Image 1 (cartoon, rainbow, N blue to C red):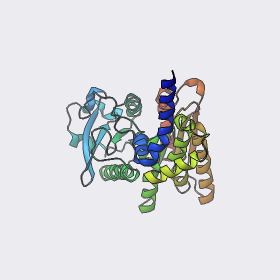
Image 2: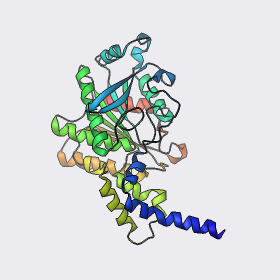
Image 3: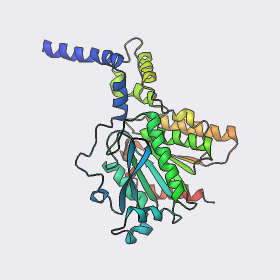
Image 4: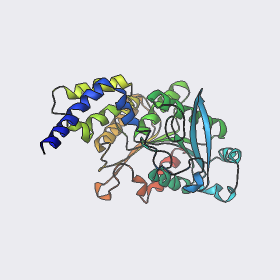
Length: 324
């Protein structure tokens, strides 16, 4: 018994020491890209888990190849059998809205909740492009905030080259919400505002998520630990500041958040909603801002908002309002 207690104390004390000596470990934990769930899916064969979908790769910069799935809208399903990636690419010019799906940490574009969401959006009539950032899935390279943002930007510009005036929406879930707003800020600075943003379970900043995580809370009583953790975060150069980004973004915005989210606290989504409303007033824009909250009794938590039977209706109403 004494040995077991001694071991647990040693492990407990060693975590801050290890983080201090090897701050890059925190970055690995944040991205969790090495956990390539599900393990036995061939990402080059999306048809094993998702119909009407083709796989392709983009070279987002020298030495970096990222995997992408393009899932067709329902209007194209019947024509898609045995079609080439080139044919899929041509369909982007059919005038149908395009959703670029930027997933959260851990795993690949084949994780079940991601696949289920794509199925819903496809059936609702949208093109969906699901990206595995560098270092995730079958994509090459190592993840970083700048790298993930660049991958999303490259895909966005690639889509814009192949559409004919269609609406393009960035959908970011969890970690991907930070990728989405980072990309949107750069696009707005260089060109014009992104057509639409949908943020699912978004956080204020990634540091706030780390500090409020159940594991780090075990150390909060230690004097100076929170400051120590913020210093480690600075050393990793991972920020993903949604709160800062939304102070300048003027794109139409829809936030989806469940009250029982056990990874990103619900109050963070509310805070981002309030920031966006303030931004609209300050910049005197009429861009639509909306937040849909899901009761804890539904049990959607962090990754199951796709279970909302009215989700396609919510998305359709939001995007169709932008056309008027």
